[in-house]
Image (cartoon, one colour):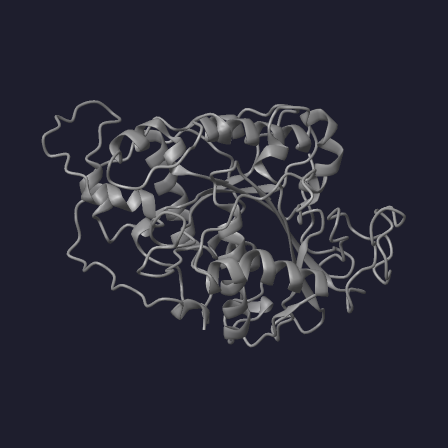
Length: 408
């Protein structure tokens, strides 16, 4: 079983990886990737890539998971995080700048419309064959220039039809520092039933996330075990459960939960926002949130994704996974437009900050790698006991945030 090495044992530096395949470059001073056929694709590496450190994220999820919206928002938030930690945030190449501005920034933040799903790789307007690359060089990692790389894959390209023909194109999943797997909570039948009439509905298949996840695991094979961030996206949908009156129901059995009480508990980690951007990532809160989401899925009879991650498709080792709750918009859209209350992202940076904390970067201006507490390894998915009904805390509901205040 292999997982990408974060630091090279001989140099103590982050490895210099190919941004297209995520493989470690045999020559860290190369100006072009040896893993790319230069006759069919531009293999030139961005300026400053030589001997740089590379952190790689592979995106996965079905059509309804909201990956495009997540990418649009996470780039804005990543910039705020880097700047808050005394770093500089730059587009690494002109392609990244053009694609992000045309496909993500302008439609969402200027036109205030929803983003379409990522087009299949075979579509003429497909833009995800090349990664989005950002320079996040920071003062608490002065010995090396740092780049963050995102590679997205359309949900259709991770479906069953002719998937074996595409597997070789997706081998970068094997080398990723993190696989960010997003799934829509409305794909869970019980959640959809409880929220019927309370939130706008959209077409979402109940088996879509499982099909996509199984195919991602097929790509990993028996040997590769990169860490997987299992993200319940559009978590604002779940927060609507606090408004669903369930007082008339009789609760008995292990999985019968008064969700109105649970989701009204503002002391729970899934109702509180992340640690401040200019401070260290709260690992304890991250562990608690992981357990809360696991218990939530258990109580909703929705452990199929976790069960699959605990039962390898190939090999013996289970997949290291950690659960997150994210909401790029913070509120349900109104038709094909964002909610009139604006954009208020919730915990979107957590999956990235968990990796940054493990590496020892972007942990606050006063932090350095020498005094960071070693991070705990992610634990494999396993069954957890049903969620007890928490006692309500006398906490006030968070105030509404102004439109785009996060992105100024």
